[in-house]
Length: 382
Image 1 (cartoon, rainbow, N blue to C red):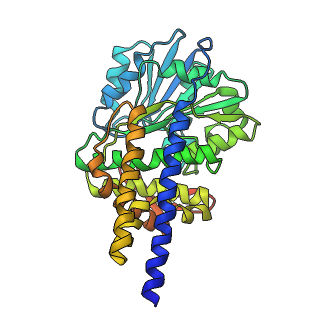
Image 2 (image 1 turned 180 degrees about the vertical axis):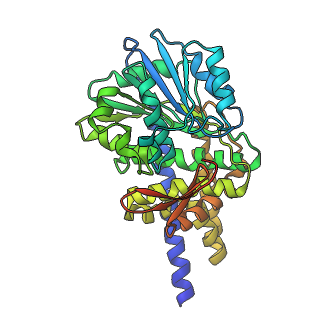
């Protein structure tokens, strides 16, 4: 009797998971059907790029931000936490090649050294060099199209908008594991984000892009207020909304380069993201088990081969349809045949995130404290 209850319970979750996939398919379609923001006059922009390590294709990825079809002045400000950081040679080469690129090599000032969040510490140190009042924060591994800044400026210029952020897909620059990570992002993370936006259950603000005005940042206490916050991007979004403004997510997709060269690196990256979501979503994170429909359907097929097998087939078709819809709007395509393996790893990461108390980020082991805050445990290559 206990076996049957387990089988029916798993199958019930799988059915809900299938319905979720169909809802996500419709949500993605509606999200990208929305018209872009009206054109607005270009404003001078400073792009803030905290760097860490010699990432694959880093110079190429950064160069995309220097060839923008944009009518106003643009400054790109690069920063590392130490002059001997692996990204330093690329940063220095960018300064030599482009008059509008500046570089803060570190070491960080005393006030920024105390930041447990290394990226925020770098941003604190870089800010005195920022020349313009419109700031665009963007992670070092992001890849953009030439119309990126124009579309960001248009969105930020809308009434009531205090910040702009962007969805993204993965590219996978470091072999098989990074390509699996790219599939995890395109086939699961992005659709889940769109569902959250559509339903209002999530209000994302992502490190792929956070564009905001200097006065908006200052009103929330600047970067110093985020020194020991793990989800600094989410905290910025919350700070924007606390001022009565909204975070706009335009219907455009960027590319996350992806440098996970091993299963361990992939695991650490996605576990950090999952633990971040857990601390932000609370009990809702446990309910997100239904977003792992393919694994639930696999379990159903094992426990009840007949109807479970049919459910598994339906789920596979739904997952492929959802990924194909994302592909229609993404600048880069991911190998769909990797979806089953990517979904299995995602499910394992989800299970691990329910109990994790420490994460690895940029070579540092960080201990979760309370309300999304972190403390450095050990430091390596920082």
